[in-house]
Amino acid sequence: MPDSHGQHRPSSAGKGRTRPALPVRAALGRFGCLALLSLLAASCGDRPGAPAVRQAAARAPEAEVNWAMTRGGPTLGGRVAARVPQDPVTAWTFAADGPVTAEAAIAGERIYVGTAKGVLHCLEAATGREVWRFTAKDAIAAAPAVGRERVYVAANDGRLYALRLDTGAEAWQFSGEDKMSSGAIVIPAPDGAGEWVLINGYDGTTRVLQAADGRVVWTYKTDDYINGSPAVVDGRYLVFGGCDSQLHVVNLKDGTPVHKIPTSAQILSSIATHGPMAYGSNHGNEVVAFHVTEGRVAWTYQDRALPFFSSPAVNERLVLIGSRDKHLHAIDRQAGTAVWKFPTGGRVEASPILFDDGVVFGSSDGRLYAAGLAAGAELWRLDLGEALVASPAFGQGRLVVGGEKGTVFAVQARGAAVK
Image (cartoon, rainbow, N blue to C red; front, side, top):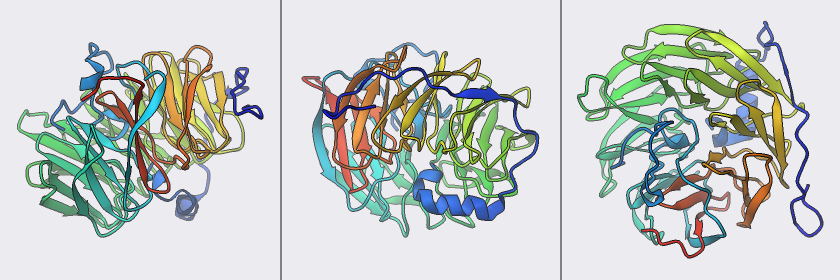
């Protein structure tokens, strides 16, 4: 734990354990999911560049790396092909019109970030100057998604808005039957004709829309609320969890069901994927690994009787996820056993970002942390002075994160030459 001088003492590996998946769902029902969501608010949903972040892609220059949608791309892996910024400093700040509880999107020379008051701010990445703003009719509790020509933003007024990148003018909007608290995903249409926008709604419906005009391509209905975004696996499947305590696997092409993989409790956040595997947390204080193509649970991890509210980040070796026990947990991706835990001074509800040589994450103690991957040793900490519930984003050489008091922080390596 941090000592009296605010310095981190390296912690020993966590005592987390794996156990067989429970065969019976927890009987929490809709009310249980709603009650927890009322505590989490928007966090329980929790581009001119390419729409996907490929797991094994060749490294791009860090000044060209984008974070065009939630968790960095359609796999929701929370990973970037870059190194952790060293000796970080705050490059600029921007005073948003309200609390920020969701990730920013970063594409090209623009940053897009929404607020609890329903305003989407478009900022210059280099300076933080506001370029334009758009106001929805309710809170923006999810990350925007940037496509070729538009930015797509979901709001708690039940609408998905498609806005022009240059001016923020509305191109079209789509209305669901309840709020949309998960971030949209933008991918090339499988037939090569334009783009698709993938969105989950609190009405329990997954929708695929044509990016050009918002026309519905297909829908898939579940039996309960959906809070997390859908992930794309192997270019063939959409994968997501819901308050019906199941991981849903459906065909990307037409929305037909492939698997429903049960777990012991509601899945309240976005999952992360790596190859044919998906990883997520549930309301039973567990982290669960699912084999998507085989339709089964691979392992279940539990440490203490406190919930994991963040979405995971995953690489070849580790699954990293924050907990309300004030720690970031590193779990062996294959075995599901604890590797290390990193203590902070507050709840870790924001999702982490995995870099090639470390992980960066925020805490409700107001600090942004970086830790090494081998043993969780602290690389640095930066005190930003506001609780960090929103997950950080990384693009164009900068970390961007919003605080609960409404400040947007751009953080970069000291002396870095970025656009």
